[in-house]
Image 1 (cartoon, rainbow, N blue to C red):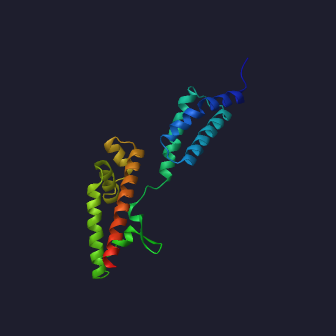
Image 2: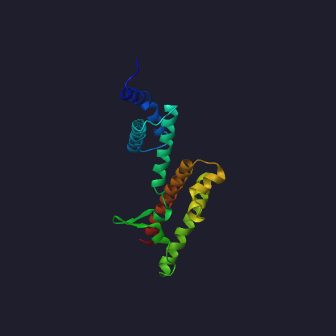
Image 3: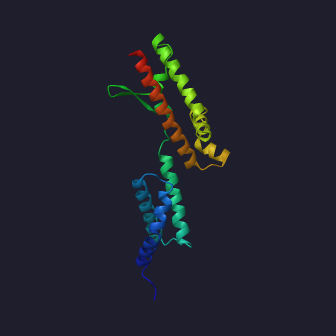
Length: 187
């Protein structure tokens, strides 16, 4: 006796939910995003079933759809840009790194502060782990896209994004420390 199509669908969802969630979780750090992607994958399965799309290997199809949704998620999110990083300048006020380093014509104090911050930034970039430094320099300073880097190196785009994110965090912390030290020198 043939099983009801809705029941077959429910059985597939029940059988694959845990493995699929684990697969997504290993690639997506945010728990809400994991659940959203999981729901999107199953919604797409329901839609494919409604359209009577033939799917030979349901498990493989589900994991491919999940991969595609993960890629879509990372494409929608703009990677951290170091020039957009915020530095605390005191009294709860924060400024973008680009604003701190933007002008050398603002007077002798600003020129001196800019030189110190740039020197700290150069030193901090040099101290990054090699893989993080390469990704940061290629993306931020040379304008290379993550897609281009992935093609050139054979490294997964998500790995490159993570390396850049770690580099930005380290540089942001280092620049914050340099700015704080500069404030103590002036005070």
